[in-house]
Image 1 (cartoon, rainbow, N blue to C red):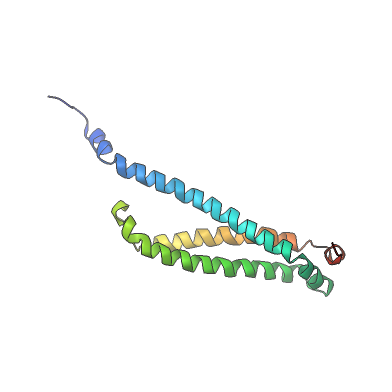
Image 2 (tube, rainbow, N blue to C red):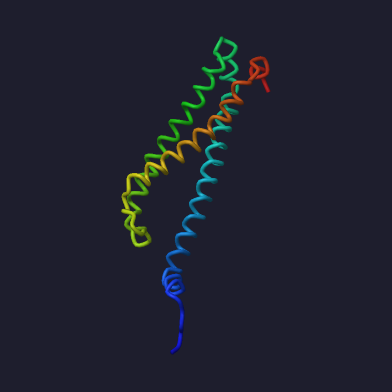
Amino acid sequence: MYDVKSMNQRIRDATVRARFSAILLGVFAAIALVLASVGMYGVMSYVVTQRTREIGIRIALGASSADVLKLVVRRGAALTLAGIVIGVTGALAATRVLSTMLYEVKPGDPQTYAAIVIVLATVALLASYIPARRATWVDPSQALRTD
């Protein structure tokens, strides 16, 4: 007798490549989520900075903090919706490549797509809420001063 191993060791050896691929894909997905949230925060922060004068004028004319918050978050929601539509379309196109790595999951599994959309939408809206909150603190007199 040679190469004596338990059944658990044989199963582990047979699935090592699939497990490595799944772990690697999970790590890349987590990195992508962090980069997407940082990118969305950066874009929304830049938009708020560029629109400081406009926001200052709106506040000076009587816009409430809630109005300013809605204005900025609505812009973030529009960008988020566009990104989700493009992303889901690309993901559905890429499922043929990934179908060999899936185990007991259909490539077009609606629950998986729904979960991903919910997570990404939540992260993106939170990333746009933070600059929107900062925009509500704009002092109109400071915003209207010329540089």
